[in-house]
Length: 119
Image (cartoon, rainbow, N blue to C red; front, side, top):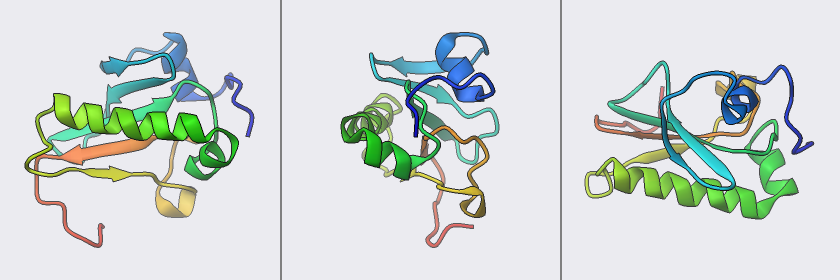
């Protein structure tokens, strides 16, 4: 739990502008960009600018940043016009849950039937 940028973190590099991404929203504390391997017609990642390895670490270390990520997830859904049809916000925490980039992030998914439980 550092909050400090990590040199080997893909999402820290996106925040720094060192790796390109299709950014759809930015705030002082968050960046939202399209997933490069979308699992639904709308698939946007919302990340805190500060580095925390997963959602649990983010919530423990910086509850306001966690709230900012959720607020931006809602704003993404509004911008993508999926609030009426419904959308899902997913945080994968740990490799066993499918987390592949260890920088906390929320997936905003919409635009197709999203069954429960997932996958």
